[in-house]
Length: 265
Ligand SMILES: [Zn+2]
Image (tube, rainbow, N blue to C red; front, side, top):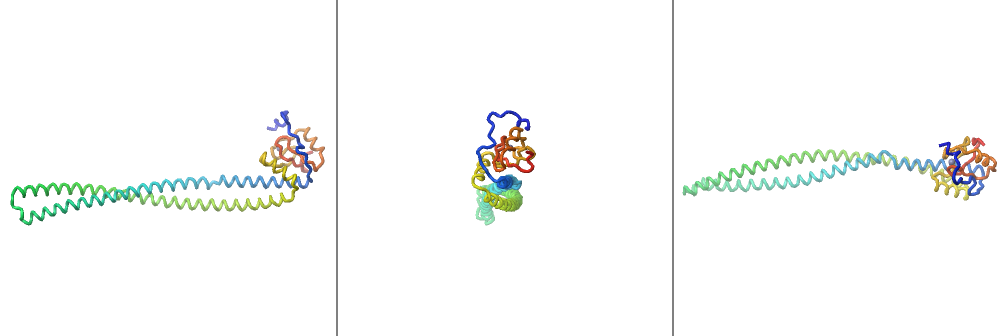
């Protein structure tokens, strides 16, 4: 990367564009301002990339999936209970008919042998029907019980998922509160620093920051602290020859380049 600094650039940006004068003290304040802006950027990034956010997305998806399963089982259980009531009613209906036949038989009212045989056949058929219906009723009962057990398992899982969503939401909100308090503190410092600067210098800083993501950097040991590139000899000589109150720009990254006692000029 450093080698790039020595390659000829197609259109080298001027180190004095736009021409601007500012007290060295104000130029140093720009470094504090850039530091606060960098910290605000880091805080915003941490807020977006908070690990709790990914955990929460997953927990919310789990909760939704379990809730869908709960609704599905609830619906199934409702259907099965209705089916069970119908099966019970059917058994009752056939039993009642068999009981009536039994009463007729035991009352001795029927004496015709053919009628008696028909009645006995009918009663046998009804008994077979009752057995079939009772088997069906038992089967539906089994399914109701299995579904009830499945549902209570899903309800327990859903409770745990809801608790996790609540826990992670609380953890996220606590992390947000910490980050926001830190952001407010840094933003207040930034406002104080910005208030100390004259409008032309601040406006230039903001313009550069909007364009390049960062507005100012120190020149330290012949290197721009912003882009980390070494300033070439010719540019360094030009910078060294400029008065202290001349605002210069990094020829590599265009940040306002602030001279310090460690600049190596
Ligand atoms: Zn630079």
